[in-house]
Length: 330
Image (tube, rainbow, N blue to C red; front, top):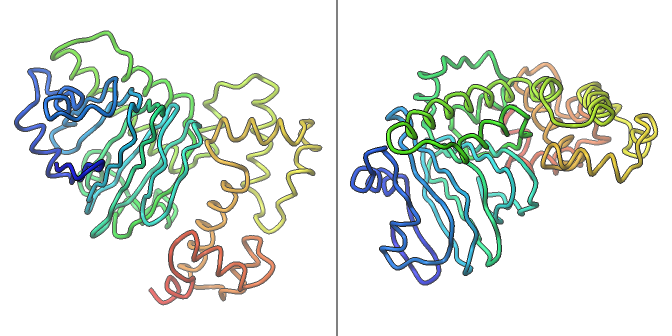
């Protein structure tokens, strides 16, 4: 871990060394205490590091930024799960910039070779959530993951052969477990045992959500009955024929909600807009269709709701970082 002006540069080996030499009897390192000892006083609050099952690392974060700074982390052959209850910071993941919108959300990121993660912390920002970093083989070993259980685009992320990030909703169960990790009453070894069990539970719910986010959400949310029914119907429509998705104006009329209320409810529940959600679904579906090899690129574009191949190609490259032809030739 190195400080260069207002930037902290680190990699996963720094986390390993930090835990190996500074953890207490409960297996915890208070990064806050460590930072103060190193005269780094840019934040206040809690940031604890855990070694999970001796094969992964977890960060428990509930702090505010006192002075602007940047962190740059080098990661390789890792999958990161970032659960944001609220707050956050602007960041660059897998070559894409994600602006903080203070919404609950889950980022699942694959870090292949020479992956970089940069966070831009601004004074006054708050951060409340949990992060987990694990290698693909250890995730598969612990949870018996099989590629056939997931869509191709998600399997790519779980294999960490590429640098990519996907956004998922924080379902009620995921929020509940994250909150329990942040606010449990235990200390010392009981604390470690409790957190380790909850991290396992959290990853189980996460993998379930990644298999079928719409089903995980439909059966697990904290909305009123009216909004819950509307969101279930909306998700059914968004999971239907991607070629014929109605406009937001038409959806709001069908659901009996104003356009503003519909978009606000969806974003507060999913951490992204309806448009962002649809783009992610279209890109995941298009990649699966291209891999099957039965359709031309033009046919795939029409199948997922684009009017022509050029607009589809631009959207695909913006989302994945390369053209559809690259997937077709794999």
